Image (tube, rainbow, N blue to C red; front, side, top):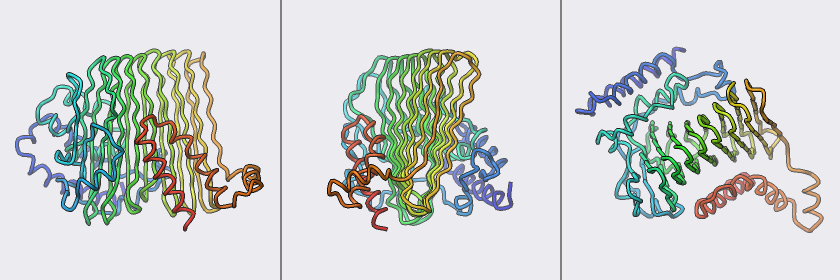
Length: 442
């Protein structure tokens, strides 16, 4: 660990001691023992550097240099219900978190099927919910990722969702995370989602910033998909230009389950999304879709892992990036096919559209196959707007700027259209259009 890394580890240790003093009886809980173990792990590793293979293209030194103040309470001063409505897409079930803490009076949960839980993780842990205590930290390892360890060290709140077996939730569940304040805050939401056998649900995680300074949002989401469960997980990241965002999504799939992820990132100075799913049951299916739209000097990094642990499991992956100005994109997609995972059918595609000569993309699709009866393909392309398509539109009387906009949004819209929730998809279309328009105005 560098000297600076040692200083930062000490900084977080000091803040952890302050955090610990305010826990009262919770300091003796099982979860707090996990917090202390995670802090020790982070103190051992510090922040990753570009010498680590998994972080070779993403320098987190700007994060390590800032003494972020951990958020111990919601900062709701000046935040109104109108602000929440403006950032929402419209659904009966919405949990609102401000600086990582659940705010009940800004949230709304409609009538739920019998046995379903849509609420705060802090409440579940304090109430000694067996599922919450039994599954937190089960799939997100503190050993593999320093940011996961740092999240666990300061875990306080987030969403806790439980959808019982056989339950079909018609309305999407919205998890709306808002950052506020004037100081550089460290926000560490933790989401635990357990979906029973043959249950169906759509979850949308959205991250917005109303803060006037750079906040570090370090979020971990764990999803357990029961036998035959159907889950769509949509994520929107649209924080302010000074914000840092590091997210890890860990999914564990049982047999015949179907998991779909749609991840759209348009905001932030430095964004890192880790998405991993283990197909741990025969005939499980996984689909990962992603879109990054960056300009200025933004860096958006997407790391994905699909682990085929059992036979007869298909997976599909499509990640796209639109990069303008001096922005940077990173994609590292890994597909593992274990020895027993015969009849695997895995497809991975990464496509990047460069709108500027100064924009850069580092892409690294990977296949590691230990079975012999499989169908696996992967590919990556990096290019500019198609000259023939531009000529075709220009020849129909469309000016150059509008023609470029049409082609660019058609490229990006391919991912946005895969979101099945109408209100959310319309919100995403508006945000992506606005982002592309800002890039043109620069």
